[in-house]
Image (cartoon, rainbow, N blue to C red; front, side, top):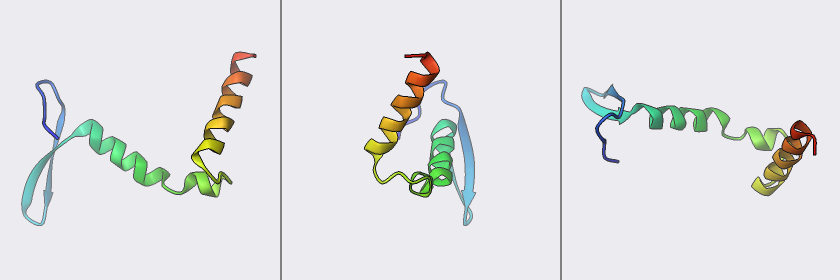
Amino acid sequence: MKLKAGDKIVILEENGRFYFENSAMLAFKRAEEVFAGEAEKAGFASEEEMQDYMKEIRKEVRGY
């Protein structure tokens, strides 16, 4: 991944080596790690099931 002007970066050190990481991408990676497996724990067998559930919630919230 290439950094662009204006990107916010984090400087990380691992085993004496330093590297740069886009801070937004680092946050997304962390969120992905934390949420891994949670859909299965909630009883969803597929991504489609979860998407259908979210569509129903949106309908309820919007009053359809």
